[in-house]
Length: 115
Length: 113
Image (cartoon, rainbow over all chains, first blue to last red; front, side, top):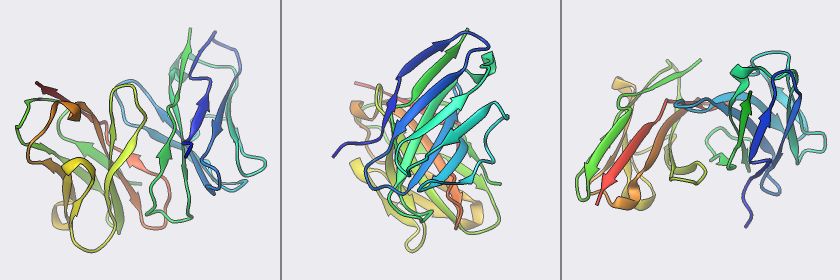
């Protein structure tokens, strides 16, 4: 079946611009995660949704970052007034169960470059 | 919060050599442990996981990992690598009842044919 998809795959933004990154999880997956992966590093947790509820946003680096999942399926990560340090790959993952032991399925990521 | 360290940044091997990648974590409670792999041009995918039971777990493509609780380690092994094992490998941990994964920095494995 279809996996997690993300769009756009690549985004170049000028410093100060707003960007919106989209994630389509696997159909029926209740859990959705966003991670940020800087060059040469492992992914770092940003935020977690269970259906439409954002249960954990402890990893969002600043109030310029905002995520939503209004209908419990597609999610959008928005970054306002982008800065150079926001350049990274943004990964979305989904999981079928509300259980920390279950596999998270990752999408291909959106590579954001802020110039 | 948990932290994860992977000992090797880049490993270069010849085909048929054995592979062992180290992973240590810091967290005092019960954890779930994962190894993810990212092949060139592909997305992260699960190799194997451990959350209870036999501390020696087997995953896909001939990989296995051993959880040693006393050492806070979860090392990944493969007895004989193939060129197709060239990839980046990430160790990840989450605490029981916590969903977010903490990842190590990753180890790039290059297998020479």
